Image (cartoon, rainbow, N blue to C red):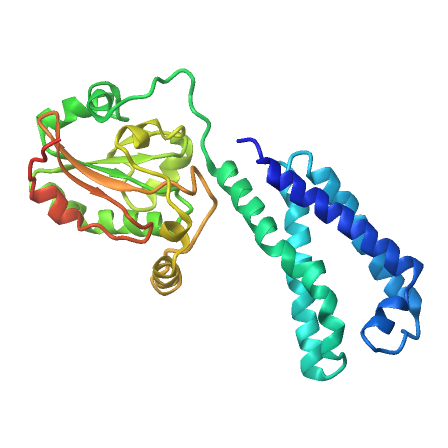
Length: 315
């Protein structure tokens, strides 16, 4: 994913602005105070030091502009400074140690850069979470996947489904609170599901060796599973990557706090594509007879209903 030209131009503009602003403050430390109607600082060297720091940031922005998505840490540090600076100024206003007029420079120093810097960071985070396609694996549709993809039990999904209905559960990455919640729900409901003749297949994006500990913690390590680090099977079943609202909307935040803190599912290391949405499919006789695609990362499927109420779909 190459960075759009506008990202480079914004960082170059930030670099030029910072160098000019820094040079102005270092060369004429009292000028800004005259403009806002304040007394010149008693120790101008401190204000000149601020100008020097801002100017050095400009050199960093220029370097980052060559590849904004790769050099996102520089953008992150810059954005943090542009957020924390206004917060510090607000505290000074509350304390009465600075006049409101002193904040005039916040508009050009900080506020104007928030949105472009935030978008650059979002795109960089999105790129870092996207799995690299496996060139040795051809893209599949759902029917082809049923015939060719083998589980940890050495059989294809289609072969499994001819023995008994199988509930194929696509998980989010194992560090996700909702993935951990899903594993706990499946462990609790497994006996009921299997008592009605349906078996489980768990699909995840972690390497097999990493998945063992996560699944064993919930007593699910003996269930059939498919390791899909490149998310080929997710795409075959038309499971999409989530939007910002689907992943980080208000409902996801509130449910995440409840599931993570109150119910103790916590959060862990990102293992897989953090943007991937999950889903659940019931396969029987080589066909998908029930499906549930998450519209938000926080949705909770009714696993027992999906496993025991197969309704053929017109596909």
